[in-house]
Length: 130
Image 1 (cartoon, one colour):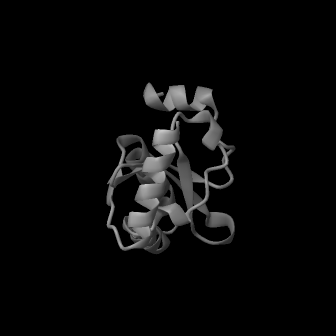
Image 2 (cartoon, rainbow, N blue to C red):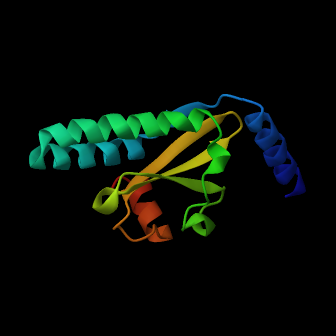
Image 3 (tube, rainbow, N blue to C red):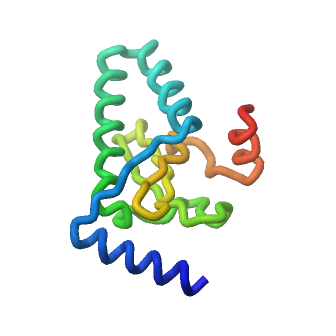
């Protein structure tokens, strides 16, 4: 455990000195983004396009200083440290859940803030494609 903490501290120091992380969006997160986009598109196509561009822009900011984001509410159910980046305003806030592995930020899930925090059962369902 101490080795992991040392690695995290080293990464955090590099990050504060301007380290650039690669950002990858997992297939599950891609599907969640696509589902939200389609729903918004049916309601208001102009808003949907703005929402999508804004979401992609905010995800891109994870290339610099991803450690600025707080731990996800449900971080304890994961085997690794999972953080969250909030995107949106008022009723349209989304939580971008991500993990940092070496020099890569993996966007794991994108969830509307009105959704309950993930549970271990949710994770199993999502991983199994349910």
